[in-house]
Image (cartoon, rainbow, N blue to C red):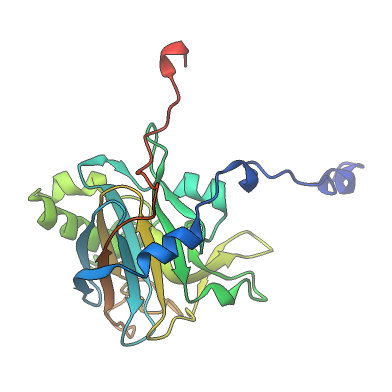
Length: 278
């Protein structure tokens, strides 16, 4: 295929940020952190390797996801605890904050709600930045490892993919059948996972996570949350994300409660008025 004579000029056009971050009202991180310093721990959930577990967080509470025994990544789903029809929207979170999230970024819910579900107030891996390959930590681009893609690519039936783990965990938490639970499982935040896109073909890649025991992320729950976290069967995802052979470790979720920052209130659902037309 021949290039047109103005090919280089077309490539040289400067990009425009679709959703300028300065248009979003920033969270008051100092107030969030000051309040959290007075919170007390009220619950903890251990997520076994190659499995998932659920947890609940009251609005204004904080949940912490920690590496405890070895390098391990996790796939996170979030729902409104009172209405699982409202859930984490990774695509819009990515559009608003970028491909990877860290301190000050928010996890947004799906349409028509489109409001912050949780705000990241601490990230011990924030130092990582971007490496020479374009890798960054905590992505909102991966969809989650699932048995359907595994079957497509390898012909295998593997039952401990993060999708499968999340389906089972949610079904147990809500007393649903697996068939009822599965449609509620959605694209994830890949906690601790190091990923990016290749320069040549834009292929999604993963590499060994820099996470070590003691590393953690803290999230302030902007609404009452039901969460589910899968400890990925790929361990640190240095070679695979669906395997019974990769070294895998548990993850820990801790829940803290206390008096939210003065003047804080849970965000209302998006105020767009569709009665004026679509």
